[in-house]
Amino acid sequence: MKKVSFLISVTAILISANAQDSSVIANDTYAAKTKNHSYNGDVTLDKSFIWSIGLEPSIPVGHFHDYSGFGFGASLQGEIKPGKNVGITINAGYIAYSGKTVDSFKYSSFKYWPVMGGLKIYMGKAYLHGQAGAGFGTNELGTSFWYGAGLGINFTKRIDAELRYAGWKQSEVTSGSGNSGGIYGGGGGGGYGGHYSTIGLRLAVNF
Image (cartoon, rainbow, N blue to C red; front, side, top):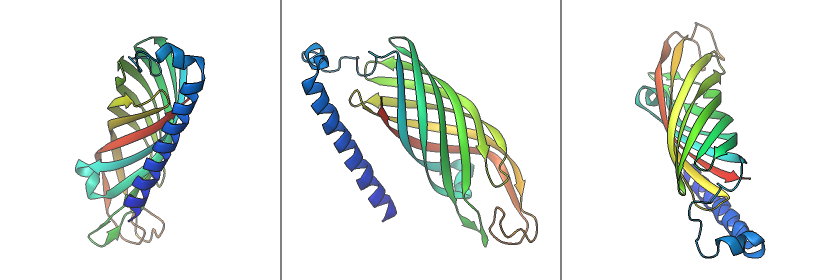
């Protein structure tokens, strides 16, 4: 039910933003320039600096899926465009993955603050985006090297969506006995670590 409500909310946001954008285009001089070629590659390429706010639902895959469920976060991204088809990005965000109960142990949420730099290659309205940087974790998760790649598309000059993969090497974390506020949410030993992977979506509004 929560996921259905989330999808309805995102859809409402996209419809509202798209209606607002259409109104602006119809009333400014940009409309005259693009009337006959309908975003033929110039969706956001007419600006030398773009910044955006994004919502980021995400699903753990592989080894990480054993310990965690659905994740949700948000990020702020800046992009400098040295050329029409190239962008250099810096992205800072926060994301939390809900912990699962495994063999009677309840894992706490996996919370990270990733900060990554990246490179975008535009192909008309679509783009490829590679990123790398650091993820700062809470609950003894430590700091790890993060990397990722995505495929995105600009639906309008304001709205874009990027489907992307992210991965990182999580250091070994052990829950000591009597650690009521630790990783498992209760006393008892155990530990985890390894390579973590996720598939996510960034739904962004560009400015």
